[in-house]
Each structure stands twice: as structure tokens, then as C-alpha cells.
Amino acid sequence: MGATMYWAVADCWNVVRRGLTHYQRQPVNIAWQLGFPILSVLLYGYVFGSAMTVPGGGDYRDFLMPGMFAMTMAFGFINTATLVVHDATKGVIDRFRSMPMAPSAVVSGRGVTDLLVACAELTILMLTALAIGWRPDGGIAGGLTAFALLLWLRFALIWLGVWLGLLVPNPEAAGGLFAVAFPLTMISSIFVAPQLMPDWLGAVAAWNPLSSTVAATRELFGTPVGSGDSWVEQHALLLAWVWPAVLTLVFLPLAVRRFQRLSR
Image 1: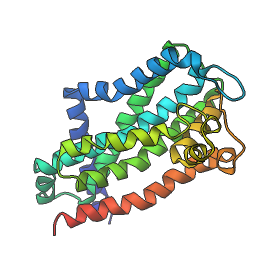
Image 2: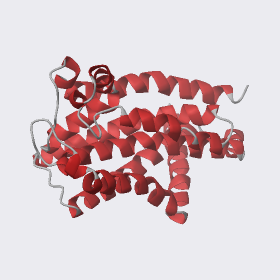
Image 3: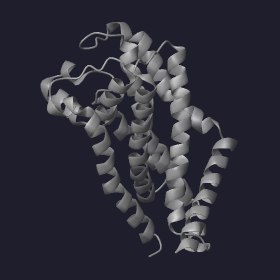
Image 4: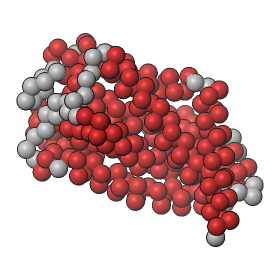
């Protein structure tokens, strides 16, 4: 049992090293992933920010930044799906399966790699936010908890990305997932508080799992929250832990089962 666990961890680390080497040789991939949220910050914060209001008052850029962090974590599943389908179509996964390595290493290695990249993305994005004047007031403990919540969301969505990457036929189809993900981020509390939307749309936005993470991190960072009076908005911190757990329980088994079916 001990030897099996050792080789599972060793094989996982080899897959992680391979993934990080690709990022090292192609840094433009991380630059592209960060480009959209940074442009969104500049667009919404400076172009539209003067026209935006925050319920309860507060600076809109302070309100916006935690939403940008969550949006970056959410969009990460598209990159996961693209990398997985690229390996599948190029025969990399088949070569892994033909080697004497732990079957779990391919999936777990992808997850660890994406979490490490997510840490780098969050750090760079937060430094960018500080450079444009964002100042969190939640203290070190609040900031670290918010950072953990954002990574928890990313961890849950990794398995959605792996599952979709094993389902879609090619990298182009995986890139098309952006057309589905973007509306889901717009109908949330990332850019606008749900209570400023029409009643029916605000209810949908409030129950969006992203909204719980966004509201919780705003509270932990000590920035304007803009929460409403609904149950889901008042319990955002609890649901920020629960929603990713539910997503993990759903998509992790689906990803593993789909990977196992490749050998049939």
C-alpha cells in the first residue's frame, strides 16, 4: 500500500512538472488568461465605473476587484478543458496510459498543475489591483481566507474542465465554451449587485454559485459588498464553501469515470 501511494504521488508530480514546463516555455498562455480580466478591470473600472453605483455606497473599483478574481478562477475551467482535449487528440493521454504509471496521475496531475497556475494568476491579478488603487481592509486573516475561497472555487471547476476536455472533440470546441461561460459570469454579482437587476434576473444572479464566492470574498477583503436581504445573499460565506463542494462531488466522479472509459 505504501509503495502504491508513493508511486501515485511520484507519477502525479511528473505530470505536474510536464505541465509547468509547458507554461515556462509558453508564458504567453498565462498572459492570455490574465489579459481578459485585466482589460475588464480597466474597462469597467475606468470607462463605466463612474456610472456604476454600489448599494450602501463605496468605491466601484473596490467592489469590482473581488469579482474579477472570481471571474478569473471561473474562466480557468476553459483552459483546463483546452489542455486536456489537446493531450487527448495528440495521443498524449494514450501514451500515458500505456506507461507503467498510476492511472490517477493524469487527472490528479492536471488538477495540481492548474491550482499552482491559479495561485500565480491570483497573485499577479492582486498586484495589478493594488497598482490601480485597490486597498483591501479585511486584514491578513480575511485576505488569506478569501484567497483560499477563490482557490476552492478553482479546484471545483478543474474537474468540470477535465470532464469537458474528455468530452469535446477538439481544442477549437473547447475554446467555444467561452460563449457559455461568459453569460454565466455576467448574470452574477461580479459586475453589478443583484438587487439592481430586474427582480427575476436578480434572483437568478443571487443563486449563481459565483455570486456566493464573490460576496464572501468582498466581505473578507473588507470591500463594498452590496448584498441584498435574500437568504442566499445573507449566507454567502457558508455557500462559498458549499457550492464548490457540490460541484466537486458531481464533476470529479464524472471526470474519473470518463477517463476510465477511454481504455474501453
